[in-house]
Image 1 (tube, one colour):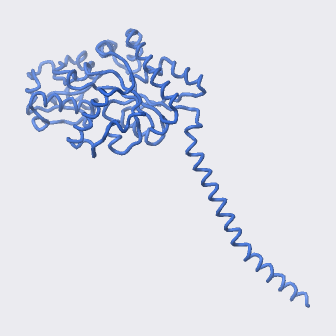
Image 2 (spheres, one colour; image 1 turned 60 degrees about the vertical axis):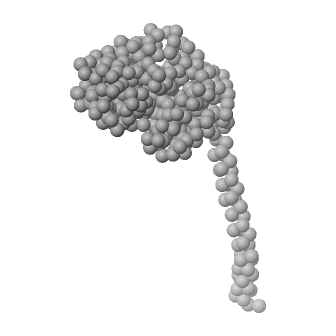
Image 3 (tube, helix red, strand yellow; image 1 turned 90 degrees about the horizontal axis):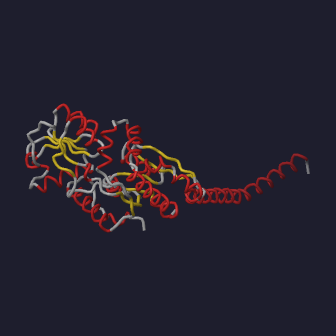
Length: 335
């Protein structure tokens, strides 16, 4: 057989082999990709359990900030093999966003952000609750105001942050006086904007919380028309990523227990606490002292009483259409 015929025949045979091998090669390639994908999924699902850095969100002057400043939680978690990464946030909504994005594992907010988060489908859980801050929350009026009671607010402009604890306080105060939001002119402003409007006389009253209430009283002579006592509790909450908290029970216990201890320290060391917070908040000591002395610090697990309080807020905000759907707060409590 001529050389060229032999060569041609050889190439034909090789072509057949390649064709026979191609399905096998494709199958092997598919299996390799599938195994890699499964391995990737496995590493993603176990990454939080293997990760040794615990990320905690806080806001200036809040209970977790105090806990951070004392350093005892860092020490305890270090003994457990963890490092703590603290992240500061400007407000509760930004902290919730970070929890949803997986940027932090635990954080502190007021009573409203967890409700709005749950209503929007966020997978968060309540870990613990602070003592009431109702004495430091209230509705302020200027020192020379003719407004003497909640009934006098009828037809007046009242500033508060929409969907906040102050929003709830205003509604409850009006209800007690036989009024509703329809009887006033709500002016929805965040605290910094509301303070300017209040001091310029652009609003008749301002509902807010400490240290803003204390600052307005100390520096502007504002009068507390009514405090939150008997109307709201205005609590702090430690919340967490549901998946992280459930798979790290010992870490979760440590965070709550050390925060409880830090709050005990705060109650027994007012002078040191005032100095610490005045520097962090960049506020005068008299304002901070006013806020500190009318508050009892504390943290504990979620009780049935606290659960009912949160549920009543959630129900009211659903009625007011502040949140898009009805929520069952119990579903978001760490089991």
